[in-house]
Length: 168
Image (cartoon, rainbow, N blue to C red):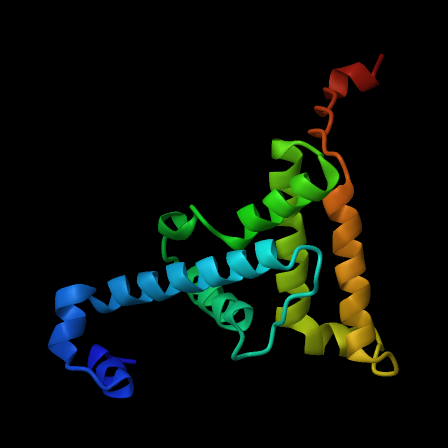
């Protein structure tokens, strides 16, 4: 989509976008930051609740834009300050007092699981032969799993022993 198309949809002059936001990439970054903030706010405002992945929801739009960033190799560090992973970490630490590092790890794991499921859901349902299980039941089950993950303490895995130690 061009900036001209965006301006037409927004009913503004394209020069205003250039003046206040900048390039098309800057506009995409601004939209990503805004959606990440909306999703993070939703997580903090409704902790431990299932978030909507409907295509028009903030999380649905953010997930699609996140995939765009990943596929095109765009830098996500610019939108990493306030985001759903850190919001999940805050919720996990507030609810379960697992510590800041454990909460960040668990927040990342929860989001990875949720995104993976929702983005690959049609495949997972077919591959798992899950057509007979209502999708809302699967979503609630996944949310419950995420609650359990969020409550778990975390320690770095033990270092791998050297091969020579196995030989005795």
